[in-house]
Length: 264
Image (cartoon, rainbow, N blue to C red):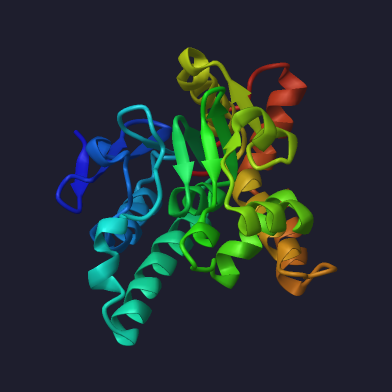
């Protein structure tokens, strides 16, 4: 049974290996309001606590991922410097909750994926888009700017030059161009996107979750500028060899059968 947050604007389905979190404001093309940003950490915590969920898919209802932040709220959330700071903090906590989830996160992107919606997609580990998706980051068209953390995620994905192009022009990219600059990882026909995401999520869920989560953690350290193994990463390497997943993987390989990894 789905779990709802923020007056049903976030819908979480925890059923089996793959959890599904849906941005659910289709009448607003899933524009993210303050309540949704504030509820995102709660929804993500529910995924983290659920032992059955190995992978999270993040998507939007009604044929769009997210058209950005809800501009209709700007007059109130930007009313004072203090209210602006509080709003930015809520957005950052929502973004960080998705980015910091230990479990793999896949963005299923259809239609509009703009501004804060694109920022949220960049918090995901993999991004699969429909061929008709439109993607961009548009603060330059509003006289605003992107935060350092959000800008870093964009630069990590597409490189400095493409990030400057996107942010300075605020232009909207068609899915093929977004794929060419690595803003998204795969592009599929609109009617095939759900199948492709399910297949990708299933493949990730089938693999060792010990490996998947430690790989995510290692890459995060690399992107933070850590150049060499630390005592923690060295311990992870040793722990892996002693772990139940490696024992199962080794035994399954020798027995010529598919592994069933126990780590959740």
